[in-house]
Structure formats: structure tokens, C-alpha cells
Length: 272
Ligand SMILES: [Zn+2]
Image 1: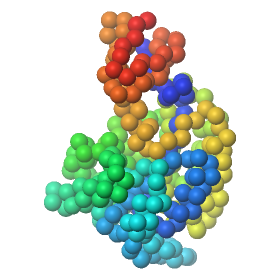
Image 2 (image 1 turned 45 degrees about the horizontal axis):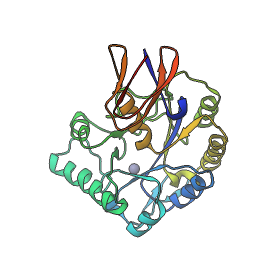
Image 3 (image 1 turned 90 degrees about the horizontal axis):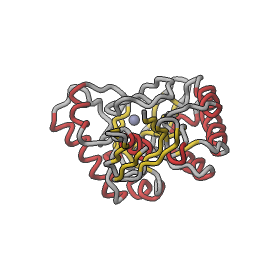
Image 4 (image 1 turned 135 degrees about the vertical axis):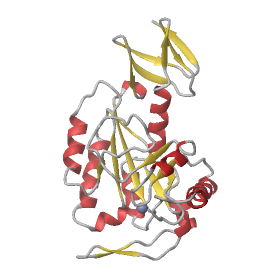
């Protein structure tokens, strides 16, 4: 039996996903750079430069969006994923609306980064079968705005729930539990949020503490969403046939096979 692991036979991965592309991301990117972390940022390219705010009742928080030029500059080296063009609810929408909100956002991000956009984060969180079906062959993954407190990788990434929201009271306890754990198969801790929430409660302090903890942990793979999900999707295509492990993908795959650590190189097969 083959058990999937990450590069160098690691079994733990941490990934961050932050939405909306507001100017608070400057502080988040600074924090990530301090600890050598690459994150994933989910952008509404139809709202570049928009001046907005959110009323939390006890506090009004600015929700001003970065301009296109600022977006191109700030997130260099990080992943950009689509979050729709203008952040509407995408349930019950026609194909025309989905084409505009999804494909145009992806095309704008492709132009800005010079890379192919492979991720989509559902604006506001609600999704329906029409949206899920529409996205399935267009992106590598579709992320919800829920959280399951699980370290197990989703069976299916169309859609999937993150592990934890950064303002959840369980955020730091889950981070500590994951760092201490020693799983025998590939797992993850998937963190999501909005950087404009840094000015609410202890959000920034808690995230800083988590980043410092992750950076000092030697058995963690910290990477953007697309790297981890892309690797896992390749790893799940490894097949066992007549005493051989066969890898038809472009990635070298690490794992445990019949009690031994093995690497199955890209487009190769290995025997016992
Ligand atoms: Zn959003």
C-alpha cells in the first residue's frame, strides 16, 4: 500500500489564504516576508482602487482595495487566486454572470502575474451546484468560507473547507496542536482570513505568533495553496500495478510503500 507524503518525506503542510486584496495586506506581506512565508491572496480585479469600509457595530474598518499597480508590486512571489470580479453572491447566477465574474477576474490576474491563475475563492462563501460544476474544469481548487478544524486533506478540492479562520478562538490552539503532531501521512493546516481583521481583537498578534512558531518548525512545508494542492492531486494519481508504482505526472512524488520511504520520479515507475 502507498501512503502519500510531501517532499523530503514530510507529513505536515501549512498554507495561508487571504481575501479581498485590501491595503492591510501590506502588513500581512511584511509579516510573511519576515518569516520567509509565501501565501495566497484572493483578488477582486474589478474593484481595484475602490474606497470601502465595513461597519462591525463597535468599529468601522477600512476596506480600501489596492490599485492594479500596487497589486502587481506587493504580491510578487506569492500566489494570486481569483475571488470574482466584483464580489457578488454567486448562487443562482446565469452562465453570462459567471463568465464575467470568474473568467474575467482570472484573465486580469493572468495578465498581472504573467502566470496562469489556478485557484478560486467563493465571494462571501455561499455556493451551489451550478457554481461548483462551472468551476470544476476551470480551476485546480474552489475554497469556501467555512472551517472544519480538520488536518485531513479534502477528498475533493471542488469545493473544500479550510481548517480554520484566523479569528476563531480555536486558531492558536489548533496551530499549536498541529506543530506538535506527528502524522504518518500527508496532512495540512489551512488558514484563511482577511487582513482588515487585523485591527479587530488580537488577530494580528495571534497570526504573528503562529507565523513565528511555524518558521521555527523544521518538519513543516509552508507553501501557497496551488503548490500543495497541485502536489496532492499529482500524488493521488500514483497507481500500483504488478508490483510497481507508476507516476504519470510532472511531479516527483514522495511516500511510504510497504513500510519503506520511496520517491517515484515524474513520468517514471519504481519496483519493490
Ligand atoms: Zn471576500
